Amino acid sequence: MRQVTLIWGGVVFMMLLLMSGCVREAYNISWKGVVVDETTGKPVKHARILASSSYQANIDETEALKNYTLSDEYGRFRMSFRRGFGITVRTSASGFLSGLDYKVVKKPDISDTIFLSPYPFNASLVVRKMDEGAFSASIPFIRDKHIVAGSGSDAGSLMKWGFDFLEGTNTMNLDSADIWIEVNPKNGKMVLNASPKGGVFPVLQTENSDFITSVTKAPESGYLKSYVLTGKEAGFFVLCRNGVNVAKMIPEDKICILSYEQPDGSKVKETGIRFDYLFQPDLQNRFYFPVSASAEMSGLPEDRSPVDLEFQESGLD
Image (tube, rainbow, N blue to C red):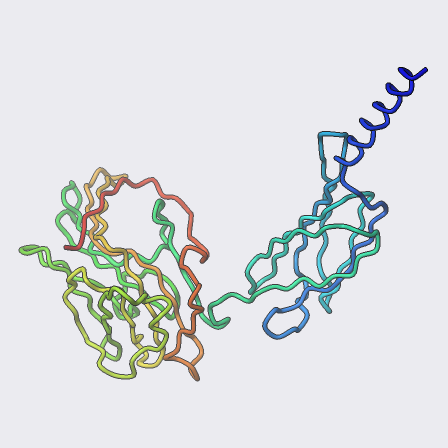
């Protein structure tokens, strides 16, 4: 009889031990709340909310129930889950940094507030970041295009591509370009040129300063019509051809050289500079490029459209 009691006591102990390993869950979960701007407290409409509710499928395995919704005009949202002990939520909205959070579920009825941080860049800024591993016709790329050899009449010709910040596009029409380059064939030096009403203002690299985050105001004067690149520049402020708008240009730290063959068999060599940029369309704040100290260009949108071109890169020094 004592032996049976001991065995039964052991079974009860093991059951209690296993039950203690299980996570307490809630059932028929109703989760509602509002998405707001962390800085202003104002509601964020049409925020995308992707959530998954984790639950205990068995003793040693968890699974998740997924749900998706959008916040309404007032930032409000509502979701329901059959069961769960925790909710992982990913929230995103236009003009805001994406948010990721985990919420422990202790009761079936949950009222919540999701806070989103606005992009660190001023909302009016036009921001372009290239993908360093791909090419497309839209990537900012000022260069000399030299048709090295071919049977056509354009063999040996040289064409220039500049960039139009007002339209955000590369252009062969230098009358509509804000900047373009010239490469000295003898010494290989590269000159950055600006339009008659515009100019370029070089900002040199420093050890304790970052051009993107630290230099947030463009100079009002001192712009140059041409500048010989040295490889020590962190970037440039560009006064556009209208003499009014200003852009912030961040070039690669290397010269990009493309060599390829055109459909007609002619050999082409392009030499130039690719770059990221910020453009300020707000004329009332045309010299200002407000950026959070924590912002990184790696967080900006990239142009990832590939083009089948072989290229090589060489340093500016």
